[in-house]
Length: 588
Image (cartoon, rainbow, N blue to C red; front, side, top):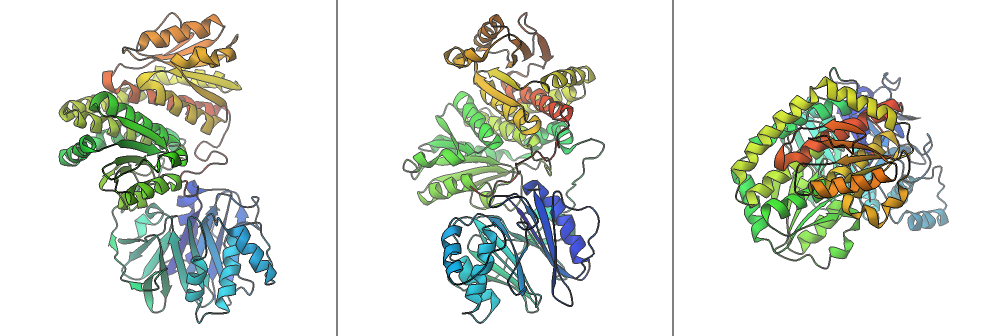
């Protein structure tokens, strides 16, 4: 979940280029950061705790690597920050991933006399390379030999004192960017260097790249053979990373929702219909994601059951191992993802693919591993999502899932018409100042609570779960999404005088069931905030939403996202960078 960045060139000060890249990567972790620059005397390293510096660094040169950290092994301090020096300072290394056999490797290295200064698993890689270097002709050979011994999903970048840059990938992402052969960028995503490059090379798992005076060389790590690098045209030149007039990226990205919904209408019917045929012909259909994408996956499965008439099972990436033995040839897995690099989901997809299953994905980041391994590839085309809390991409994912389900049911034209109407309804809703004032006032009150609960059913079940996720992520208030029908089986014990409950009620066949649950919590003294097209006498407060019929659930997530935003703001939290989490979860 960390971010890696590197620069080799003469057009820019390397430290400036790397700092800018790290700022664009800090959604991947912002516990600490570091930059290493090659100068005429050796390698200078500057490391700090906290967000990436906005001011230029004093260390200067034409080659540099950097890192922004989400801590896994070791406390958040400068010692544990990357890059890490070799014992003789002949190279430095930065790392994204987890070395699952770090303890075993460290114990063996300590017996050989190697000393460790940090608590990180990354330093184990450094010492292992040093150990291999004593037995190999070149540093590149030592890096390759050491990398082969690492277990887990890991990507590293090495800067040597002679100016050589070496990077290797297994699981965690690694991309290169180039412009006129005068500059070379290394990064964890394309967005971080998009404005400066014309071509991109996405490294595959098990590949290593070396940049030195001889040029760029790509090597198969296992076999040691050279691979011809295949740079592709940069697909996101000029991608805007700017919150404009909005106070926070999160608010801007919620307001981007009408745009991202309309982007779905640009998808060619043939691509959607091809996926629909595959879904109808699949032996088993699974949807899969983690976190917010997990809620999106479950909502897509709901739409496939209701509008597509197919049996679809929703899986959570980290909890899907019991399905491994069930995956078979002819199955289809559908994966929504912002980054396309979520480690626990990729592991499931890799296992399913080996068993002959096909993969469909809906991803917002070009060149991702998930996209490259998919049989059916769909891009959100939603533009950069910078806030760590995903909003517009979730909306895009479930709206896409609705369209696919309608296509499976033979009603794609009807689905596109409903999506078009939805985009207009969301746009009008976001411009309604009276609604915004109501949500702001509710958020000020909810921000003072220790606990709150959300009720929903049917099409709104995953919506209240995602509302719960957003409230927890942004405000750090405990929230609990409860199936309305399950309330009386356990959660009713938590209801007492003044308990805040958010109930999402759509004008559908399950409306009466949710209203019954509201009666039950009101009878115990709960205060109910109703999110609904119509007011109920049981609502303490009413947040009105338009009734968009089949797409009502997609409409309903918007007020919950806004409520989470205003709660986080009322509590004075870092809205775009909540504590302890990162946007792209590339470790298990």
